[in-house]
Length: 210
Image (cartoon, rainbow, N blue to C red; front, side, top):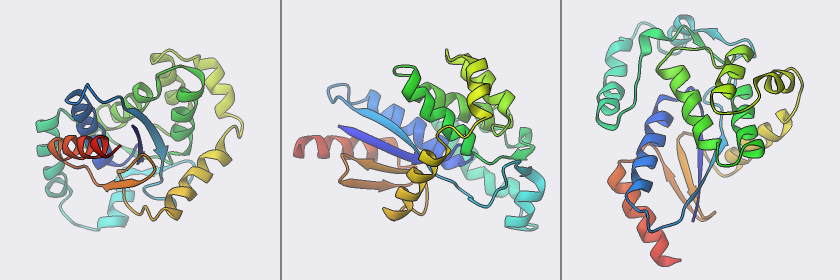
């Protein structure tokens, strides 16, 4: 079975969705599943240099109580082990380069794409790091066994930018408008950070049909 998770690093529900998918897969060890992480831009209008988190959130939500907005995520995070630290985040980055890094993890280092995705999510949501910054991305790459110096060179070039943009455009063509979205065996789509039990049942149902 192939599961393609379409998501963005700066999407908090995507972090929750990944952790829930991880838990679900652990509960169906009899089913062989390949997970591929596909790119999406939660906000395609973020400039390459990113934005101040405070200014960005104010532009989107005005004077709404952000702590109240974050509370459901924090509660869900406690249940599923997602370390949200909203207070540490000072930048809202453009994630094109983070998606390039996830792509390279699949290309260059066998079976490291999931680890790279997890490392980027933790860097942003747990540690408050700017995952649009090349130096930060090189450090994250090094932490999962990639060559940080090589990554810095690739990031300074246009390597795979077009390919990432084409994948995002493909997601739009499929009708994906919110993330996370899971595409299973190119046939079935699941939207949102579904509960672990729902994912387990869906995976088993699709496996039985196959």
